Amino acid sequence: MIPIGANLSLEPRLRRPLPKGKGAGIRFPIPVCAPVLRGNEEKYVRKCIREGWVSSLSPMVRLFEKKFARKIGAARAVSCSSGTAALHLALKAAGVGPGDEVVIPAFAMIAVANAVTYCGAKPVLVDCDSSTWNLDAESLPARMSARTRAVIAVHTYGRPADLTRLAGLCRKRRVRLIEDAAEALGGGFRGRALGTFGDAGVFSFYANKVMTTGEGGMVVTDNSSMAERARFLRDFAFGKERHFWHAEIGYNYRMSGLQAAVGLAQLERLNRLQLARDRNARIYRAALEGIPGLRLPLPCQGHSNWVFGTVVEPEFGISRDALRWFLARNGIETRGFFIPIHRQPAYRRMFTGEHYPVSEFLGNNGLYFPSSSALTRKEIGYICATIKRARNLR
Image (cartoon, rainbow, N blue to C red):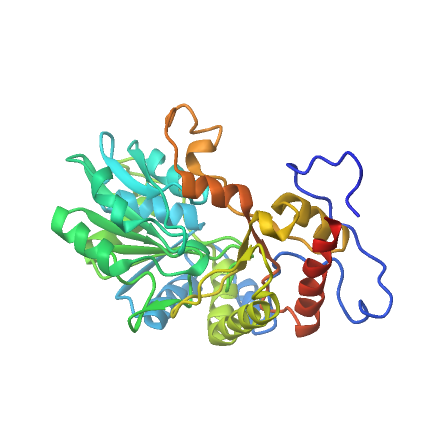
């Protein structure tokens, strides 16, 4: 049961349940996501250490960039220290700067707005579509202006954004389209990998992503000038004339050889890791479909199934937060959906008086369940059974 007096607005505390019978063979607690490091990760890291190539100058870094670009069908890839750094570099390479506006979804991880702000530009918000949870392309034109320099298409929770409409509109308005595919590695749209449709695409290799380097990110583009610019800024903007000569302010956004070594091993197993996420989604959908008050994501071709989320509606009988507490008391970790950008304390003043009802509803009522590629059918079965038991709390 949920502890009396529990503040449901806070993150619930996980505890290891002591189930009898049904819990046998399940690893408790069940984390919301855990990396799967069962390939050549240790072998390649040991090689880096043995040869002394652990910094960003390691041959592993360039090899990882080359193989990643080839894997997703991009001409060029620039590795960096995080997905946020990748997004910042992509925007800078696209020429975004002070006085510019960049249109982004209101329902997104705060890193999207931060990267725009790092450039000195202003994020302009658009509500999301209630069925796809992605930026509402129909509402986009009204939010663009003469100062719009770029649009960021976020593939939220791995679901492809409406790239046909977004790309067409950006071409017509002559603004850059940046794909935030941080949550969408392995996903596709009309036969191409997500991240390869815009002027640039960005990926994250944080530990909870389909593949990981611990921390890390990648910018991909077919534009040689943008790739060169991103690489230049990533490396402190070192001048070619002489060492320690900097005509511009650059960044230390470099990936280490150790991270690239892990990335190479993960890339070798990307297809298998992705298939496991697809399997997770199928099992969740089969078990939870039809439960009153659980609005599951619509099936979608090209979805990377990074996580499996749901919106808890009144018909379910208890709130999203009460469900999260109940699952945590039974050893199951979850995450609430993103808090919309305009409701974040860091941005509240910038967006005073603005309201995005769909984003707000999702932020208040959405959550996603454990989604690791290492999840077993038994563990997902236990999670789904516990979700169904939660309805008895009414």
